[in-house]
Length: 280
Length: 280
Image (cartoon, rainbow over all chains, first blue to last red; front, side, top):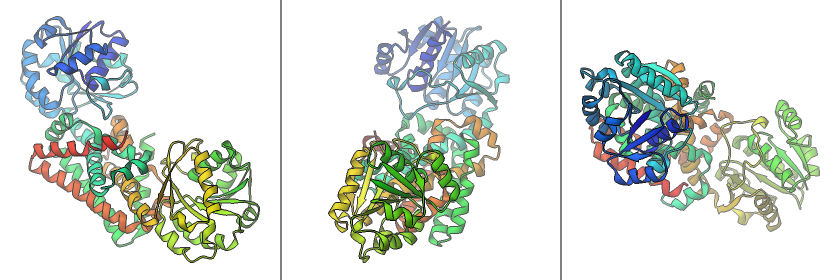
């Protein structure tokens, strides 16, 4: 199969590497509006050739959109305008509701499969692409009833070959749960970095003292604003809702410290320890 | 050298393993008020024998206190009462100001070296003890001018043998910087776990969707309240100060989302990205 990857960054690049390695695609065409990224993706053998979107689409059975979600909104309708009857378009974006509403009435909607791999790192660009990023991770497919059966089968086969678990959701559920489980983690991490950079004027001290715990809570703060601002924009209501809850949890902890109610504080930590049962 | 480790949990146990492995101590005596932990530490060969504190101290050149900081406050004065002239007591606690104020006037203050290894995991107890926990990590020594030269040399030698970097601070500085770099990370992680447990009633969804990013920001929420409540209690003012800043950063992000000021949100993320330069 010839596949086109639009956006040869962390996710698109890693997926390209996996598709090639698992024999799903034998030829990958890279498309990106950033010439520099295209050159790097070619040098790193992430893609076999680079081409214009039009040229690439005319030769590819599969088109994967791995660009920021706002760019996706702009590009997907025109891509569906051009898609051939037996070809498939899939995305790998972090929000779904706006995108799927936008193309709901498109005559070629059935050629599109909406996917979100729950995997990534805090790095971006083709240099960040890694083999096995998706192994044993979860792939969410959204509103699959609106995709053609053969298109869905192609994507499900990819997910299987790449070694991912499959989960099905509707777009609304997806955006709600990812706000809780992914988007809020990024917000807290950005805010934590800002807090420490603000309070800790002696930045050498951070470097000296930061241990694994700090690094792990703050590492998502290295994430790209180009990717994340559009996510927060698209999922604004859910993110605001969970952010409000998070602020009120922190205010509660602050209040208990102010009142020196350490018994209640102890119980709160015990309650939060329940996350152990859910995560390994 | 015979060494006593009081508190054979994650930190005490890991240090015992390192001291033995690096040849700093050839015999380790374990002391713990928890009989179960003592038995496990013996079974796991973390300690060579277990004994009462009095018996252990009478035979050890080095006593390491690795117990929660509130228990340390209670125990350290009586330990210093009993310490021999050429013996050394060190602690590995996460807060220093209260402890050092408490023993400031003690006639044996010079036999005590206050230390804090910037290393740990979210697990606790002797089963959590691991070799090489301290390799390439930072050890902070506090108010070393109040320790005898020979006592300090023994501790510095241990730090060197265990493969740690040395940093010197006074107790006040230590408590301030650790609030920024370590304690706040735990607060945010506890609060994040509570937020997600509160919002995400379908806990199966967390399990399905949680990726590396979520796990990394929330993993400290598995930490023990027995260890952490006393830390927050001892370092209350600094923790409250940094917590207030953190809440106000989150409120600022919330406000920008409410106002849909995505340009300002973008700049905020860019600013938080500066943490890249400080952490590897």
